Structures are given as C-alpha cells and as structure tokens.
Length: 213
Length: 213
Length: 213
Image 1 (spheres, rainbow over the protein chains, first blue to last red):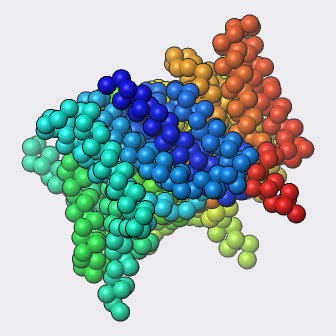
Image 2: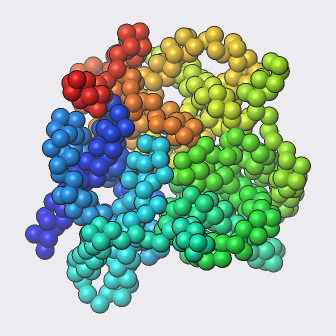
Image 3: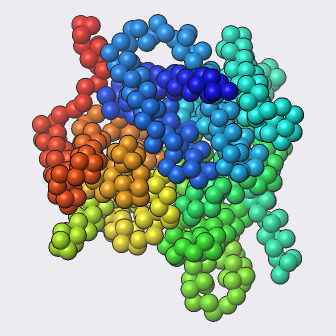
C-alpha cells in the first residue's frame, strides 16, 4: 500500500495547489497586493486544516509546520501574479483539481479526527470544515457571503465523503484503505457531476417566492 | 439538586434551539441554500462555545462532540425551511428563549472556564464569548457588522452574568448553585427589560453629533 | 539584561495601547456603541496573540489571562470615547507606537513559538499572525477587506522581523537578545520609512492594467 500513500501525497499537494490558486486568483481580482495574494493562497489551502487541527488538539497545526504546503501555496501565488493569463486558461483543469482537493481534504480530515480518538460526529463536522474552511475564510476576508453557503453542491459532497469514512470505520466491513477510496470516488464524482449539470441545493427562500407566484 | 441539573439541561437545549432559529432565519432571509441554513443554525448555536473550549483547552469542543446540540440545531433549521410562516409568528417567544440562551451560555461559559482552573478574567471574557460568539460569526458570515457591537443591551447583560459568577466564586458567600441562579436571573431580567424598554448602550459617535447641534 | 526586559514590557504595553487605540477609533467611526468600542480595542490589541497561543498550545492565551493588556485596552477605549478630539490629534505619535507594536509583536510572537519548541516556519507564520491578526479581525468585524491585504508595507515588515528572529536562532552567531534588538530595529525602521515615503507593495492587478495602456 506504499504506492497508495505516495498517490495520496501527490493528490494532497495537487488539491492544495488548486485551493491556493483559487485563493490567489480571487485576491488578484479584488486588487490585493503581493502580500495579500500570498496570504489568501496560503489561507485557502491550509485554513480548513488549521481549524480542524486546533479542534482535535493536533498542535501545532500541520498547515503551519509542513513546509511543502507553504511552498505549493507560494508557487500558486507566484503563477497567479506572473502568468495570470495562463492561469485564467486553466479554469477547467483547476476545477477538477479543486474537486480532488475537496474530496481528499474531507476524507483525510475525517480520518485524522477519528485517528485522534474523537467520535463520528466530530469526524464528519471536521471533515467538512477541512474541505470548505479555507474557502469560507477567503470569502470572509474578501468581504462577501461565502459562496458555499449560497449555492452549489460543494460542502454537501464533502459531508457525504466524511460520512462514508465514519460509517466505514464504524461497521468495519472493509479495510480503511478501501473505505477511503470509495469515499473519495463518491465525493469527487458527486462534485464533478454537480459542476457539469449545474446542480444546486434548494434555496428555501427562492422556492417560497416561486410558489407565491 | 438533581432536578436543578435536569432543568439546566432543558434550558440549555431551549437556548440552543433559540440561537439556532436566529441563525436559520437570518440565513433564509439572505437566500442561503439548505446547507447554508443548517450551517448557520449550528454555528450560531455552538460557535461561541467552540471558541471558549479552544481557549480553555477542552478538546474536542463540546459543541462538536455532543450530538443533542447538532440535532436541536438541525430541527431548528428544518422548521425554518418547512414552516417559515409559523417560525415568523414565534418571534416574541423566540426572543425570550434567546434571552434564556444568552444568560445560560454566559453563566455556564464562565463556570466552565473556572472549572478548568483559569482565572476570573478568562472566565468573564469567555463567558461573554460563549454567549455572543455564535451571533458574531453569524453576522460576519452574512457580511454585516455584528449587531451586538452596534446597539442593544446584549453582550453587556452577558458580561454582568459572567461577572456575578466570578465574584460569587471568589467570595464564596453562598453555594455555587445559588450564585448561578442569581447570575442567570439578573442577566435574563436585564436582557428582557432592555428588549421591552428598548434600552441601548450609548453610541459615542452619535452623542457627539447630537451635542454638536 | 533586567533593564532590557523592563524596557520590553513597557514597549509591549505601549504597542498594545496603540493597537487598542486603532481598534477603538475605527469602531467609533463606524458608530459602534460603548461595548463595541471596548470589544474592538481589546480584539485589535490581543486578537493576534490569542490566535498564536491557540496554535502553539499556550492555553489559556496570554491575552485572556494577563489583566494589564485588558486594562490598557479599556483605557484606550475610554480615551477614544471621552477625549476623541485629543485622540485625533495624536494620529502621528500613534502611528509610531503602532509601528513599535508591530515590530514587538512580530518578534516576540516568533520567539514564543520557538520557545514552545516549534520549527522556524511556525515561528515566522505566527510572528506575522501576532502582529497583524488583531487588525485583520478588526476589519472583518467592521465589514471591510483587511487593509493589510490591500496595500502598505505592514505585514511584510512583520515578516522580515520574524524571519530575522528565526535565522538568528538557527545560526546562533549572536545572543538571542541581540537578535531581537536587530529584528525590532529593522522591522520598525522599515515600517516608518514605508509610512514616510508611502511605499506600497506591488498590486499585480493594477500593474497589469497600467501596462495595458
């Protein structure tokens, strides 16, 4: 299973890169300066994991102490600054890597919480937090309502991924590695399908208004 | 005193419910989707307590690990989605339960900080944080200045409740249970009176402008 | 070196005071009430240090447990409420003390992280966080994009101060006290020069637009 873990590590860095790119491009669009772009790239990439680690007592948070994450975030920031037109062409592949990051962060976030001895509720809630926390901080810093609270199947895909990890760990029908692979696949597929078919969760306020007509 | 603790538990869940309802209705008014409404209900109900637990070293935070809070928050979210017109009629009773939650969170927040061996300053600051932290996160996520910073006797009622707990614990004139009852009653009464008579704290910038005329 | 530590302590409180004043004046300008002004004064003064302490496992955070910080923040809030016209005249000296606070928080933040046994990356990231975290929370609460992400040499001065501490601690060419003095001086000088000559970091989005013309 060593190859599997190398693959994980590669996907983890690829997801981090995609998240950092989303932070850096959002920062550039809002006219932030060089420091702001780097700070947002890092925050989106590592913010969710840092909150998770604070909540499970993993001190210091992995995002602060493992330099590859910082380096990947800074590379993403540098690309956004110097090759912005290229980065803009990459929108589609970046969305795919973003979906990779989403699935991987949800699954590994839930696994880490379980590994630290916490219960299934903590694991599901922190799996979601790992996956979407960075994006929420990005939107708060850029002074707008977090997009994941308004529309799109994004956090709910992370919820399902984390839930599968917790259920798999509870029933132990198959090995933890297989549980992770299934959770990753379902979360990733759900997100990609949602992007392709523009699925959204219902927005109760709008439904109400429509039914009023 | 067993009955007292059952009463506490009931009031705690009632306060959590009122807080969650305030998060869910605010989310619905801003057109958030189903996930956003659930997320805000949970955040308002448990956000303050989670920050308190991180600061006193109670890992994992109680809000993440005790399922009744999550269930109560999701029920509040479900009611807001499906029975919005009923929820809107409940504004007045919800304000009363919100005041219950405010007092109870301030008092139990301060007690928990003392129980973990921290000093009076930590207890007062975290008592206030427990009571108002969730509402502050709600307003930040909905992209507006937190209402408790702008007007109303709300955080200041929490401050007085937490302060009574700390003073009672310091002087030990009466039992901790009586201190809690007195602190709860004063904080709750202050909040209800402030609501009824529309008391506000002074706003220095406005006072200045008025005295200029 | 006892005198040095007394000087540190005085500068620490002076920096805290300047930070609190910036929070209180920003709060007053946005028409916050008395509680809001005190809360922002305290948050700007202690917010960055609280995040740092949560991340390095220093529980409870120093900002919550040492009353001098709270007292200094409340004095700054009181002055802003009652002697606003005087405070406005103090803009220039306050900017100097703010630069003192910035340098001192960056340097002591990095030192504290190293002292708790964490690596250089954690120390640099948390040195910056200590110095600018309070100001970021202030801007988030006041519902605007944090000014340090948009322009000015501020966070980058903190970065350089924290970096010098980490390099000095790694190479150990000179004593830790001297490293701190050099880091403080360079960070402070950089900030003051940036203020005087209105230096800003490049803003990539603007540069692009200019080069388009």
